[in-house]
Length: 305
Image 1 (cartoon, rainbow, N blue to C red):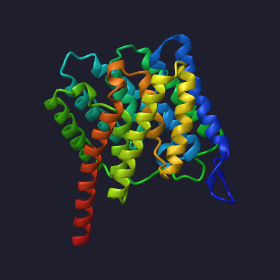
Image 2 (image 1 turned 90 degrees about the vertical axis):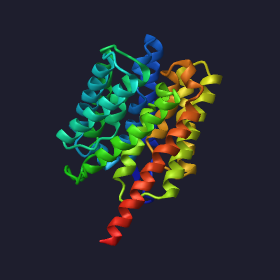
Image 3 (image 1 turned 90 degrees about the horizontal axis):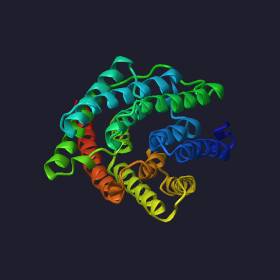
Image 4 (image 1 turned 60 degrees about the vertical axis):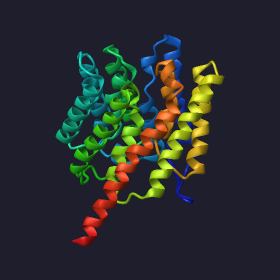
């Protein structure tokens, strides 16, 4: 799985082919077994990030690739059993996930999405955890077999303060949704992943925030339009992935979440699907604006020292 051409330093075609085939296998298996929980949007993002982009923060410790998402999926599923207000479920899940990631000293952002997904799709089926385990174990196997993590340091500096900031931004967004009566639309897992990763960036600008918000909204819109026009989920997913590659290249945006957003149309309730682009836009503008404000404040504080 040769991810880059040494002569041009560009991503080759084969990693994309392998990753997309893996994604289509997941969608096809779901369609054959008539079990929507098999489709894990974040697995699509992980396949692209790990097998194509080789994101160091996602593959530096291969065993975490399946351990962290499986544990967070269990956390989300357990919290979803509680008979409490939905926003409280989300906050509890986020807090426990942050504690867990702190405990294992990991910044594996997609684990946030697998933990939030049971709440987003309202599943209480324990098979969900095994599905996450199976697919993430396969992702790890790809990384190990092809030595994609080779030459990447196993340790990195993790600034845990960003976990607290992330929780604060998430709480603000959840509060706004709850006050407006749209708490059921508050959780778009891939967006939370992008927010968390954006906080970790040493430099974050308005241009980056705009690119993220626009490309994510465009990806969501494409997903909904294709969902409306194509009956076969496998064909729809294939078209989604090809169009997202074009979007990614067009905007020069290496954002794995772009590949996850369209797949939400297969697992969200139908009434939630139609509003996905609008909610993605509002959530992105709100949460990325908070990230931007914080990062500007952080930069000013450092400059004044």
